Length: 124
Image (cartoon, rainbow, N blue to C red; front, side, top):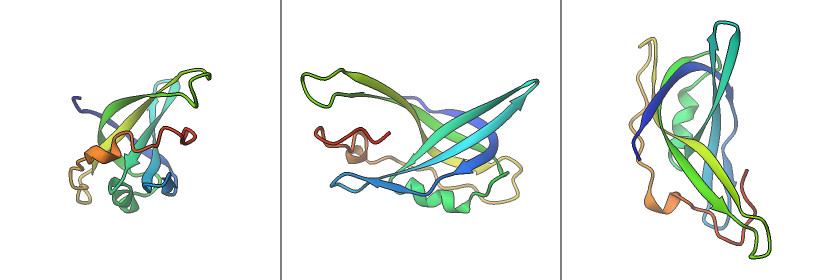
């Protein structure tokens, strides 16, 4: 999938969470964008090794984040309802003001895309 970018101020940085037997790691960062009367909050998932790059961020930092959209289909078992999830997976970031160095571009390993076992609970 093609990458896009989003710019905003860091509003929230969650601790890294680990899921499943494979040790899938995810860290949520929320950017805030204020445009006129409205404030937009954009949740971005940093996956795998990208979780560690978030250590360089602080609340209030202005950043530009490269991301890709990722969609997932999930079903607990054959008798349960099918659910679909959409997330924005961060691929890397740079500081918008140029005051500090950017994170390295982050490649997501193939085994980390859909790193959830089919019999696990959805990690959301």
